[in-house]
Length: 219
Length: 388
Image (tube, rainbow over all chains, first blue to last red; front, side, top):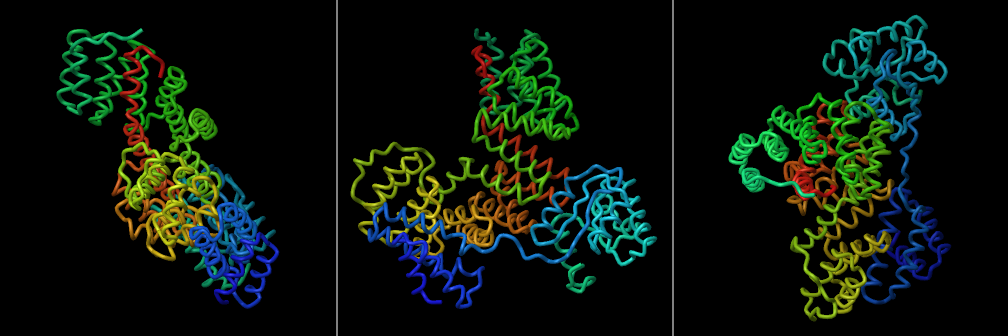
């Protein structure tokens, strides 16, 4: 891709010709420039030319505005994709039975969705049987159980026992919440495979689970 | 009808306004020794005790002032702040802020504080209603917006909260002040008549900046055109033009001018600022925004808001630890930066550190009410017998 294409895109803006602008973009894309690079390699230099033309008086204020409208219209063709690629990994998460704390769960669920995990959020006050049922339904292999009180944190062992009784020993159980953050041995005691201490920690731990346990496969 | 002040109260007030706290406290006690049923002496004492972090004493004095005059708005303010800062008294706090909102229905801060007290007591819906009421009274009320962002974070996560943070930030006048500080304009406003601006570049640039700050974008544009006609590569003129377009919601024109300026001067702070703000409006450009704000924080590290802007762009990338470091840098530079405090609170929430989050929001409330000089405003209105 040369600066000639950026010049052509700039000219299409000034000519108020969105069709030509799109043609330029498609041509550059088909030459092998990935979507994530179109903005930097094509759009940014074209806009810089537009700014320069306005500054030098080569185009007047009205042309600048009209050209900017065209640039805005075709902006979506060059924007890097917002959503991350689907990881193919399905997760089941929820807050333990008799526990109604939702803040951490909601923040973690949102963070995981944003990076492409398929999140099944069971909400708060979730019984162990409901975790198992959704695990079976979705074919997920990873469960995140949130608990913010000592009693509900200890009760997570019932989830592990239920999974074991149903032959789902392969399921990865990750736990989150104050009691687990304060005492890591509690997580081991309830049969959890790991602890999540926040949204960033969830992203890190899940990335490791994907590579180490799921072998990079979708599940 | 105005409230009469004794000479002792006047002396205490004078000392308090001058920040001479021990002498002011002494004068208050002298006033109370002469007239122990003077609400003004009690309310001043409450304010002074609060300033000295003697919360129980502040609560006692403010309560006494309210008992003597249930319409004493500054006493409600001191009492509510004392409850909040003491902690663990959310039920009383809700009552006090509710009373202040009744006594002074147009007082925006009362609704903001009431919302925060509701939120601390886990009345989420009531808290959101209070902040919305505050925004009805003042759509630019930054703290109400930041609180709504935190509420969105708790319910729906960062992707929903971040746009609210950014909108709040752009409404917050401190963000515009950053641009003009980067431009090197003095803090005080100077009236500019575009017709009398001389032909020298520096004078025109200064005047264009001042006019942009006064939101006279047409006046600024005329001067910028003169500058660009003389030198189309004038990076300062291009950067001001980019800002003026941004403020008129012409983001593409703003981007074009900022990018042009950066082709001539790659680390120009004003152009970096505008470009970063434009980029941060597009979810797909989070990485771009972060790159630009990293550069801005590097070239203008002395401004706390450059670190806040960087932190917010890092939140968009879910790099919460890095965002926390940037927010902390901002708070170190300016402990009163409400936006940084709320941002830190958001990061703490992503880590499950609820107490730390609450603490940051309480500090934000402390600095915000102090910055606005709210106590003295209410005090003066009370003395004058007017409504807040």
